Image (cartoon, rainbow, N blue to C red; front, top):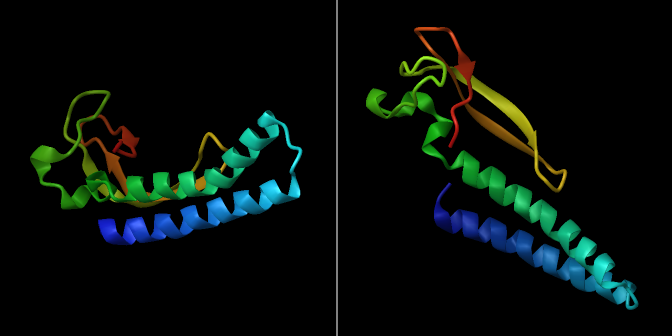
Length: 120
């Protein structure tokens, strides 16, 4: 995804978070600082999760087979160069308890057999 498309998507989501927060504030005019802070965190959590997901999926590590062999990550167990082993989807949970889906290359070490999702 190109930078312009990311900015547009994130801008739309940010606008939704801001208007949602403004509406919340109108409904809760006597909210405490803690309640306001919790509401802000809640409204921004979805935007944050989308940004994390999109940024991770923009990584070159998403498709290990597209990387030249010298640029592929090394096995953390033995140091051999990892090889692609198909694509898998991982579901991860953010600190704000939102789920993100990352479809990425799965890698395997040809020397020791360790399998993992490369970082990045």
